[in-house]
Image (tube, rainbow, N blue to C red; front, top):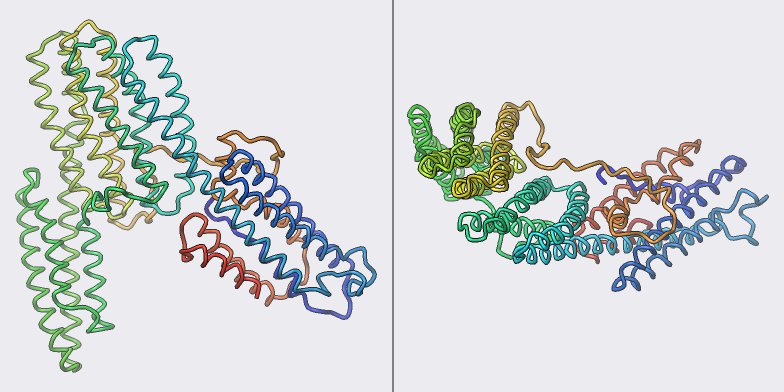
Length: 596
């Protein structure tokens, strides 16, 4: 997906702009002909796949078929116009070629690009539809699972559910791998991680409920798993369709780190322009940042020393901004050298104060996280719950569930504070995911432990508690890695792009599309081929090898071709819902521009 370069425009442009020479060598003519044939062959394979997809999707069949016919016609025309190697006089009027009809090549190239783009857009719509259909199947089977009353029925339906979840995981894994937006990719990965872990929880929680149908804590435990899975399925669809029916307000508020970053950009912008924002705008931005620092100063887990430093720096930040505004207002009225020097000093002092504040909250959050992770690394409370549960000691279980609730509150608070200093949006989303996991898993462990204490000889109740405890331990382990990532970003040791901790790693999808035969494709094959608009690899694989053989390419032609390639890539991004082109009209306007 990422890094694909559309080279077809380069080849076509090179052909169109091939300068007339007194003598054309046989080698050059053969190269031109091979390129034309390669384009035609690649388009033929592309169209074969497009037609196979059309046959599997009735509602888009007509549109897809028309686009495929246009692409095939354009490819054949390019092959005919470049059929010059066998001619003694390529310019002869008796045979129309690239040398006698450059306009024909332009038209064919434009038709090729527009038809291919249509196929890509339609293929992408099909992938989205497949994911939604897959989600609907999973939801329907979950409804059945929730209502079963016998083990035999449960086993049959769970087998079907497992197959449907595998299909959904494949489709969404491909989609996650294709997403360019790091924030969306992190959210998708978080949702898929929830679904992956909840599948095993759903199995043991449901079996426990079936074994102990009158047990209230078992029912609560099972209901929690189903609820969380439904939320995760909904979030995946929101990301795939790029819609948030409940409004963007669901997303967490701005973090201290990003607030300070934006504030400093505005302050430093005063060097270039004294009039681009109001003093009220800056004051409001600082107020929001300082309100967020109350998450630290109000927290019972923040040390006295950190609290005092944060309060002092907050007070200093207000003073520095007052001084900055004072000089700034004077400079607007009278832009003297002295005033501009005073403004520079005020800017530097304000930014330095914000840097100090950022470092202080970072230190407060990461030191708390390091202490908590070290303290809870032995999992003593979980071990005690397992032991007292098997003993049927309800009093001891109640005591340890209280301790686990305290631990959960500590870890949730740790995640909230870490989010403020995470440094990148993907890491911020990973912190939110971790917070949700502790928030939900804590009560689930408690209900599973209560069920075991009520039924101490139940093997399935014991297994169920183990599954939830493992999820807790896994999240705690991932927090250590997350903490290291956050520190690396803060110290500038790592770039913006992150691997999402505790989330499924997207696999590599290097299927050799060149080897595909025109056969009926199943759903998984369709998803792999259609993802990222058939990868465009089919259009370029053969032609690459031909271009390497070309000699004597004028620099001007190559540069022009590269420009065309860049424009084509922006069109390709449109098919992913990204880039500068926003509407279908933009897209086809770009297709026209490319060949004028």
